[in-house]
Image 1 (cartoon, rainbow, N blue to C red):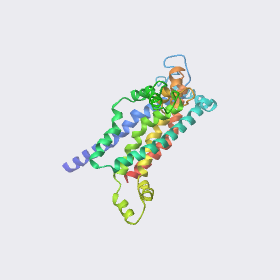
Image 2: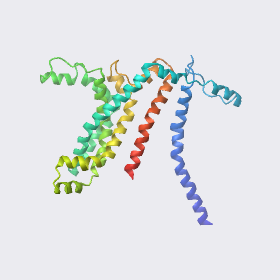
Image 3: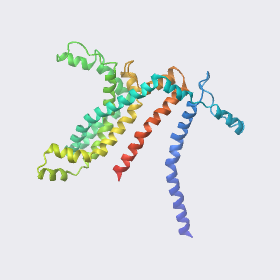
Image 4: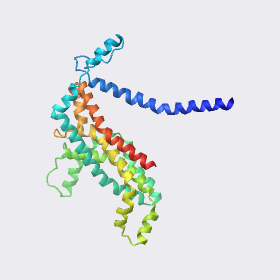
Length: 304
């Protein structure tokens, strides 16, 4: 009897442990997402909040069915009709892809150097990569304004050494956005790459060297293939947040820099068109579902 009660208690505890993450997802992700979807199907109204009310359950199912019939996909149709939105989506994906590629080019040698450095140095080097996270993201992006503006530190340095004769007009521009994204998201590429490269079995490289394989060839045939899980994880960790980036294009980008996060903010805050901004957010999430699922599969394979 005591054994049966103990088994029942363990079963309830197991179900409780399993249920906690699902409750977390329902409360903090699914419920807010459904509210955003509902707002995207509503109509704009001169009120606060500026859209037709949420579902009202007090008047019975008949009234509820009538409210459901008032839902409209007009806001989603607007996203396809207005060139501003699909250009913003395409521009965001393009900027995120190019930024991810640049960050990979910069981050891989850094992670490789950290993984091949002496063991007593690795903790210090890792701390140097993490150190920028101790400062607010907003302050770090603001600091680039002081560096890139015409009278900023970069132009002063280039003028003092004679590389340029006139200040460069980098700010605001799409180039400044690339610089900001590469700087801000570089640690997200370095950390998973370092974790993968640090676990690399060096005896494979020693065996390749003993068999006469040149170091560069050994890198492309052994090191790089084995580091692909870190490359994939780093690329997704950079690409996914970069697509919806708002702060960097707003502070460093010019009027020609179109990114969907900036467009969404303008619809939400300036135009106060919450239904359209909600539709923009839902479509953005739908675009990111594919890379998120690919990232989860990559993580699952890496753990196996």
